[in-house]
Image 1 (tube, rainbow, N blue to C red):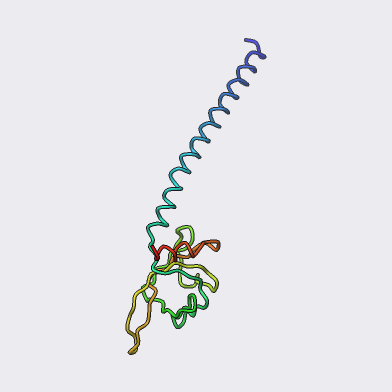
Image 2: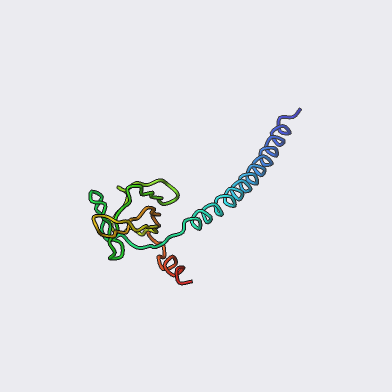
Length: 137
């Protein structure tokens, strides 16, 4: 067989394989986006916030936290959901951070403190009004 003919066949086969791989990758990326996007949206909807705000001050030693000029205590069993569904700890809480939270009222030393038992750290550009206005519905 002629070497030129073999080279031409190899080039044509290479082009066909490149086209097939491009289509395959395009379909794979589309399927990946279709499966990831709804899961993220559902994850955000599954967390119902009783309240939301911006951290004004946090004292991890005492367990005190000020959010929107309101004083709260951090529950001993505090569960913190980080950004992008990553686990987070108390040390990740910072002044200026936007959070959604769930609370309970507990008696302590004859008083009645509000404890935060669940926090979701929200993205910096998150619109807190969206959460706070849902309570009005």
